[in-house]
Image (cartoon, rainbow, N blue to C red; front, side, top):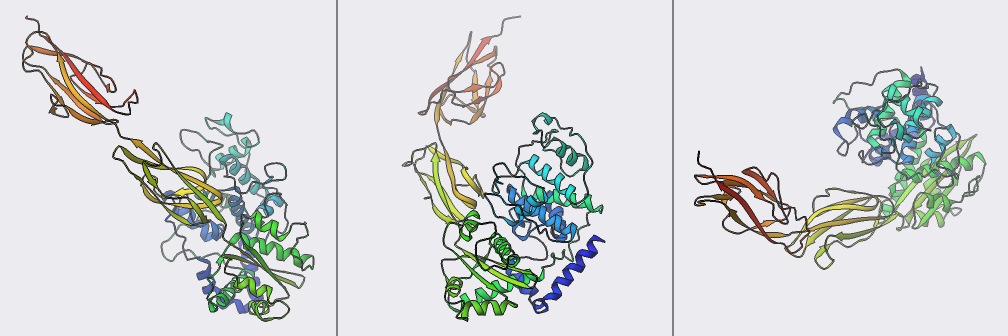
Length: 541
């Protein structure tokens, strides 16, 4: 019954803007939504769950990528809103305000009581979500959907590490099979929670509250995308017409940004409810404050219109009407703007459409090295890059005694594509600053010789290293190892190996053993290692 009501509501909304129906194909092309999600960045175990979750419409388009990255608190809130509105069949209309974010999804789940913030009126939207936080939000979400999970105590080996406020929720999620452990009966309550884990657990919660089994995925036909509302069709058409105007005048196309769109929708709704025309919301927050809270630090701009009945009318008013030009027109053609979001709202016949422009947030990337001085290696230069961009990085040793080991993240939310490659890329996720460093190790060689102690006739005793007689000196790299063998002559027998400096013999009492050049004395210049085997004469019987 719930699903039938939801379908009827979508149909009714679509009929309100019949002219938009012909735009469905182009809207999907603009938004990047396809019949099936791209799972290149997802773990194999999560493919089926992600496919099903997208098919059910509980994964926002903005979260259908970078599946193995750690989820933020705001991203989990977006998933929670999508699940709630799918199950209940209506939009969450209430809002809760936080000091540090105007994210529409965060404000919605705050209104429901699914989240309470981190104290001081803050939510910390960009903080990485922890596993125990996810459990609490899932339990509360089930409660507000009218399907509370039965109480149960957790049975993990690290129960004592779970915060007191999260114990009950962790037990509920474990008993319901919505969340499991991380291995060895550990829950790891303060560990990170990835996007794909978040999506799969939302799907399990959907199955729990709807009491229906997860669908069996079929390669063909591909899952049908979630329906787009008439309001979103309106917004996307405004977006398309705006870029058409820019293209006619040789200005680069704008990129659709979900966070700007959420802000525009919230602002349009606030203006419509209060029959207002001012960019300052009824809660006192200004346009600048709200956009800056989203992380945009560059140029920003806004357009607003009252009573726009079609997207074509709205864009024409902004571009050709004396009442709106030239400010709105200049915003549409401003080459500094790279991202945009559009919001449509209608309340009691009062229509408001807003458009929010911003310059791509910039992230300052620093690149350093460790294990070598700056004149001994050549590394890429840091710089400022747009958030979300992929930056090439490289590291090369200038001397023969240095070797590249790996790239490490030193700060910020970034992903290194291949940390073991000296030439790779780094993806700048979010925030304002990020840092990576190239790790080098100095190569140390030791000159290895061999000798013997013996009693009696020593003719014929042999020491080999990796099968070769070690009577000749060898250059061995620190960190490597060789297999030693002591072969006694007739009438002799092996006694032991003497332990050399700057190396370790695995078993000094074994004729065949391993010599490890571990450089325990950290001799940066190398040196000489003498391998000594002790033999003795076999006593006569």
